Length: 304
Image (cartoon, rainbow, N blue to C red):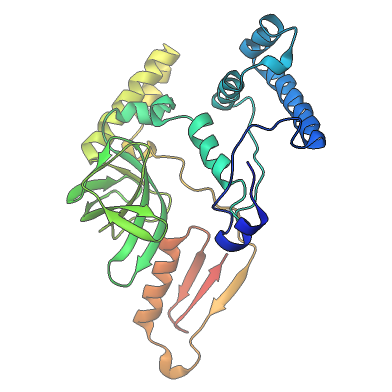
């Protein structure tokens, strides 16, 4: 992939040329690329037995003859098995390397139906989603980003928040495109949805279709424990599991390293209600904020 100097200055690298590198184009670059490809072949053969057999058998006389498709298949296998992680280089500032990164996401990462999460398997076709981000809009109120792991999401539908033990109603479902939000009738597993109407949901909550589906998933999990352990004692311990324990991993937040106190500039601007609302909004929006609202001084202390 080649980015011209004029392209980078005028269109931020959005225009590029993709062609096969030949030895006549740049001998030094061609030799360096061949060495890098040979190193990649050796690394893949070390972690993928199928590729090692192919390399030593069919292409034992000439490693350079290994097709690019076979190479990509091997990279995908080791990525799915978590034996290796592909690393790509680039600069998002100038859009260099962004295009192959997007291609690598579709080529190497698993599709939703290729992920074997027990939690998702227990919910089957019912909705199971993770709220991973909350933003506040002046017109529409809190907007919750959901990653859908199973089932589908539709507007004007009620959902159950396991973490908050409450039911809420989604009024609209939007599909985010950078700073544009497109309203859609439904969204299936593997997608990210922007929802309007969830007033109590915070970052890290697990959203399912109903409390009944959460209870049913808990029962399937209990049966799974019984079958896996094949023992009465383990089954009895698993029978006490409640639906509230069947939640997604959420967001891991490290201990805060920054501390600050937010106070009104003057006594006349000490409006208790406004400070309480702002504090709640900031705490819901990001799990990195941990704070305590002080009623006496009408101030919120945040730790980030």
